[in-house]
Amino acid sequence: MSVTALDRSVALPADVDQPAPRGGAVDLVEVGRAFSGTGGRRDVLRDLTVQIRAGEILAVVGPSGCGKSTLLRVIGGLDRPTAGAVTVAGQPVVDTDARTAIAFQEPRLLPWRTLAQNVELGLPQGTGRRAGRARVAELLELVGLTASADLNPRQVSGGMAQRASLARALARGPEVLLLDEPFGALDALTRLRMQDLLLQVHAVEPTTVVLVTHDVEEALFLADRVLLLRTLTPEDGSSSVARILTAPGERPRDRAEAAFADLRADLLTGLGVDTHHASPL
Image 1 (cartoon, rainbow, N blue to C red):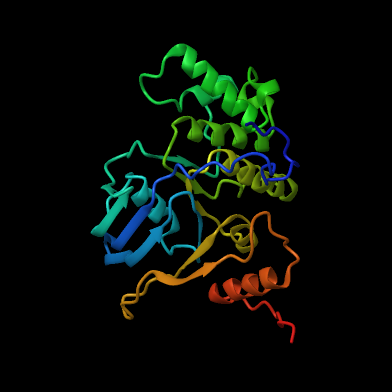
Image 2 (image 1 turned 180 degrees about the vertical axis):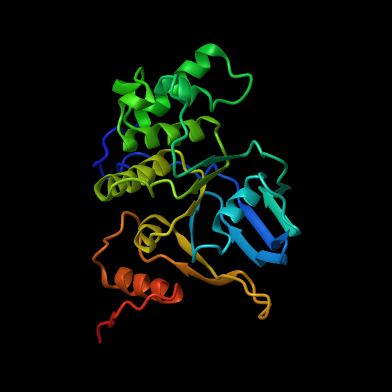
């Protein structure tokens, strides 16, 4: 089943079976990551223990410098923890782990290649030419870029380029999709549309997703759970995990729902922002 329209409902039709999660469960056990510099050792992550269910969308929020991007790099095998263990589907994460794929805030497309050719770069090594063409076409249709397949990145909008970046990450067939502020550089309207698109894609290809974002509303709208990280200080010895919240209701969620607004205020308070929000009696 394919989804091409950005404004289409993210729910699959009632007569279509919901696809089983094909993502891998991620287990982080007492994970720590420290860096050494002229000022001595600095802990960025400490004693972080989280279990991410297969097919779950987990959003990660927290103040700048709390280790959100570092956590993604550790899960993806792009960085090694200095303490603890990380597994995907029960197996240890290795360097540049092929079971994971990452998409960044910038699309990072090669400007001399078409969108289709950029997506093709994400295919697993050894993919046959015919199978590769079919998979690229399937992914371009999924993200609504079939008509733009032969355009270069400079010929498309930022939102279209980010859709191509998402398709390239999915081309790998990852068990875990890591998204580092993927919509942060987009305008407000395009960002909302991309949020809907991500849910549409996840409904069709239900991989495990770990999403780093500074947008609390985005986290609650997209995720099953939200992991709030804290900035570490040398004095307190606390875990990086400040809280883990379960998002209310089923997707797609109503941003105006009272429970949604209350959790949004709760998360912002955890980030040190005074929301002046009063819950209804």
